[in-house]
Length: 228
Length: 201
Ligand code: SF4
Ligand code: SF4
Ligand code: SF4
Image (tube, rainbow over all chains, first blue to last red; front, side, top):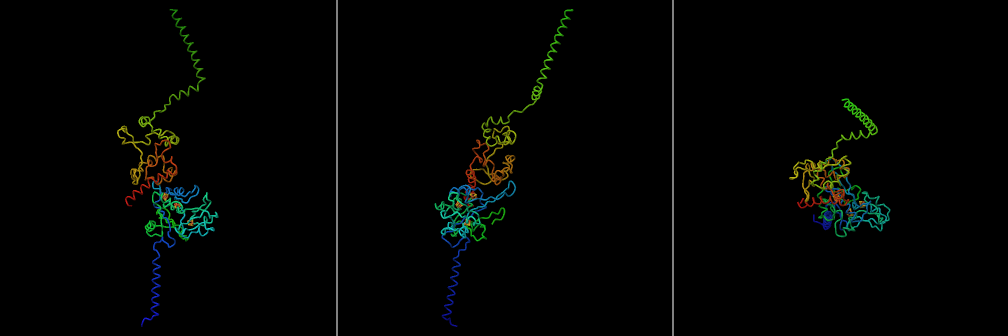
C-alpha cells in the first residue's frame, strides 16, 4: 500500500510529539536537589558527623546579624550522654530555618511580610511589613521563628542575606565552623560543592512528609537514635 | 653533848614546821587551780607534727605553692580537710630528681589526634596521665561541670585546657569568658581539619 499523504502527516506528528516529550523529560535535571525555579536556590548541609557542638556558629550568627540574647536564629541541640566513662558520646543537631520551598510561614502571612526571594530561594521577612500577629511563628513546623525584641518583627535565619551574603561572604555560621560541618551553596548548580556533599553522603531532611520541601540537608549521625 | 642533841632536835622540829607549812601552802594552791593544772598537764604530752613536707620543694620551686593557690588552694583545703601537698600530684619523686627530673610525675598538654602544637598520646596513655586528677575530680563530677569533659576523657590531658599552677584564676579555662572558651575549641579542632585537608583527606 502506498503511503498516503494523510498517513505521513500522522506519522510525522507522532514523531514530533514523542521527541518533544523526550526532550522535556531530558531537560528535567536528575539531581534531587535541583529545581527549575528562580536563578539560584540556596541551601545548606549540616554534617552531624563532623559537628563537635562548640557553638562557635551560634555566637557568630548573633554578632553578625545583631541577634540579642534570649532569642536565636540558630541553636545547636545536644543529645543526652550516651555510654559510660571514658567513652561517653553525644550527638548534635542544628535548629534553624530550613528555607522551605513550600513555606507554611509565607502562606499564612496576612501582610506579605514573610516571603520567598525568588532570585535566591531564601525565605525572608520584610520587618517593616510585619504586624506581629504571630501566625508564622505558629505555622512553622520547625519552631525556628521568634519576635526580635528591637524591631518587634518576626525574625529567623535568612542565610545572612543582608549581612555576609550581601558583602560577598559565606554565611557567618559557615565561616566560623572549625570542623567544616556546614556547607552552603546553590542547589540549582549541579557542580556546586553543596551538590557534591549531598550526592556523596547519606543526607536527610526534617519532616519532609509535611510537604514543606526544606532546603536544609543533614548528614545523618549513625550514633544514637534515628533522626528524621 | 647535851647541847648537840638539843641543837639536832630544834633543827628537826624547825624543818618539820617548815614542811607542814609548805604542804599547807601547796594543797591550797592545788585546790584552787586544779582544773588549769590538769589541762596543761595533758596537753604537754600531745605532740603535733609540724614539719612541712613541702618545705624541701619550695626551697627551689619558690612560687609554686602560691601559683597553685588559684586552683588547688583554699577550696581544696576545705574539701580535703587539710592542705594538699606537692607530692600528692607530683608523686613518684626520687631523691635525685634534681639530676634530670625523670622520675617525677609532671603534667603537660597532650592529645590523641595529630595537631600542630600539642604532643600526641594514645588513649591509654592519656587515661593513665589523667588518673591522678580523676581520683578526686571523678568522672561524675566532671560530667556535672560540663559535657566537654566527657568527650575529651581519653582524647586530651587535663593540662591541654587547664592551667594548674595558675596565677590566681586569671589563666586556664575557668577564668575565660564564654567566647574565649569557644575559641579554645576552635583552636584545636580547626587545626585538625587543616592538617587533614593538607593530607588530602
Ligand atoms: S523552616 Fe519555618 S520559618 Fe523557615 S521557611 Fe520553613 S516554615 Fe518558614
Ligand atoms: S546563615 Fe546566617 S542567619 Fe542563618 S544561622 Fe547562619 S549565621 Fe545565622
Ligand atoms: S561551629 Fe560547627 S562544629 Fe561548632 S557547633 Fe557549629 S556546626 Fe557544630
